[in-house]
Figure 1 (spheres, rainbow, N blue to C red):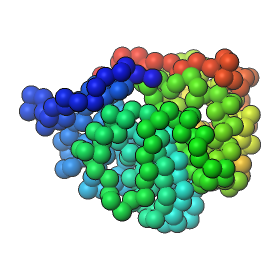
Figure 2: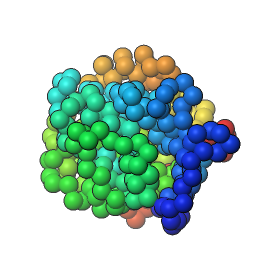
Figure 3: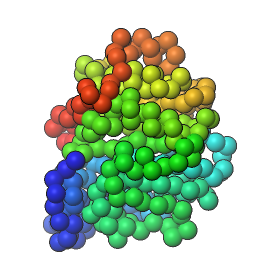
Figure 4: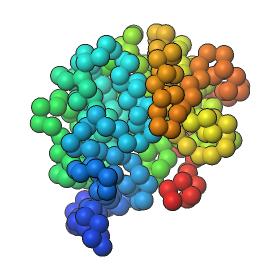
Length: 292
C-alpha cells in the first residue's frame, strides 16, 4: 500500500509555483494551487491527481468523478438532511467537506491509511472546526470493520494506492461488510478505474450484484465503450435507486456521463463472475498518458 517514507521535510514552493511538496507514506505528495481559484488546491501523489479542494467553496467539486459522487451524496436523502457517511479513502477529504457544506450536522468517518498524508492535509487544508468529521489512520477494510451495523446512510469507496485500488477492497467479502454497515435504505458508491478491455470494471459490477440487488453505473461513454482508460462510479443499494435523477444530473455535467442500470448494465457485465478474496487482484495501473 505505498512506500514507507517519513512525513517530515516538506517544502513549500517549486520554481515559484507556490505549491507544497512533501513525502508521505504512499509516495511524494504535492499540493498545487489552482490558478483559476483562490485558496483552491490539487493533491497529487507521485504525479497522479487525487483530490481537488476549494477552501472558499467546499461545495465545488472540480474532478469529474467527484462530481458524480457528489450527485450520489445529493440523492441519498432529502436536500440538507444530515446523514451518516463513511469515506473509505480520504485524500484531501474533498467529499467529506462537500457533505459538511451541503448537509450541515452530518456525522462522518473517514478512513485514510496514510497518516502522514492526513497530517499534511490537516495542516495545509484545515477542516471546518464545526464539521463532524472523524479521520482514522488505518487500512480501509480494518476501519470499516469497526463501524457498527446499519450505521451509515452512505459508504463511499475511493481508495487508491499507486493509482490502483488494492485487491482486498474489490471482493465479495469486502462488499459483504459494506452491506453490513449500510442501512437498508442507504447507498454504496465506489470510484472505479479501468481501461480496455474493462475486465476489472465488469468484475466489480458482478461482485456488487452478488451483494446488492440494485445497481447503477455512471461513466463517460467513451470509457464504457472501452475506448480509453477512465473512472466509473458504481452505485449500489438494497432499495430502488434514483436512476432518473442520477441520469439527468450526470448528463448535465461539463463532461456528460451516461448511466447504465437494469438489463443494459447486466448485458454490459457480459458474464463476469464475482471476485472473492482468494482471487482478488488490484485494479489495473493507468497508462502514463492518463496524467499528461
